[in-house]
Amino acid sequence: VYGGRSTEPQTRMGNVAGYRKEWIKAQTYQKRINEYSEKSDEAKEMTDSPTRNIGMETLVGVLEGDILVHMHCYRGEEMAVMLDVAKEFDSTLVANALGLTLAFAIIGPLISSSISNKYGLKIPFIITSLLMLIGAYGLTAASTLSSYAIFACIQMLGWGGALPFLYSLVSNSDPNGRYIALAIPALGLGSVAGPALAGNLIGESSSMLMLQVLVIVCMTISIVLGLRSIK
Image (cartoon, rainbow, N blue to C red; front, side, top):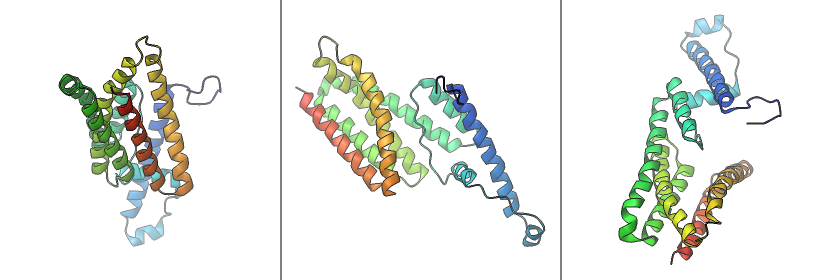
């Protein structure tokens, strides 16, 4: 990952090894905390309380379902590995939710291919774009794992459904194929720049309001530009 910096991790395997190492520490910390809390008051007075670790408390919150984690993957094998990691640490519900969102991402293009001949580009593009907008906004407002999983499925359904239409728009306006080759790098650039910008906004405002506004503005601009490209 970091090339010649001589800093770990340097590979995807190293990343996963680091994840597992910290989750194992979190499980150990969770066990010590639970064992201490189950002792009687008399037993607590005779033993020292576990040393508090803020970092481990955060990971324990994830293990207990109080904190939600959004794991962004770019490759199929990364998704499979993260599912394995989730299952290893008994996050059955998290693993099922992630698998469900991936299933919706696959369903989207299948739906698009079946309705494009009948409805053309405009109506399906509007519907899938609105699904992305609803899902993305819902993810910023979700407070439970169930609501997070629902909005993630909606967002991935819209994303998977809109992507074929976006490529169609580019290819229709680019008969020589010069710009279609830039579509993947553009998506990658947005995937990198978006989280960085959102993280800075949340860090500065300590509120999700700025992120929600950013989601609405960016999605609206994308929809308008896409509609203008449809002839």
